[in-house]
Length: 119
Image (cartoon, rainbow, N blue to C red; front, side, top):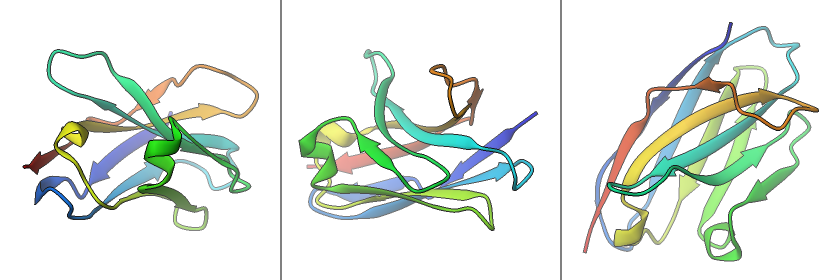
């Protein structure tokens, strides 16, 4: 069983920055792909970024890649999402998720942390 706990959300002005953190309670030897998703009011949850244990990362779109950076600390079993130049459309509940390498479905989810960007 994997438990994920997010933190770092909050209210920020457009153009500002936030760093989200996700702590995973899991054995350090687990080969988990960690991801961030977000869900805005009235919209479906969407993929933001992911990173493998080896550090290979992928992003939703170039527009996100230019402003967000995903990273992880395997020793501390944490994953981070550094967000710069935040826009009002980045307002959403951000979720940390995990899946086993070699699988496609994220099966472990955190409770989410709210990010609100004021314009």
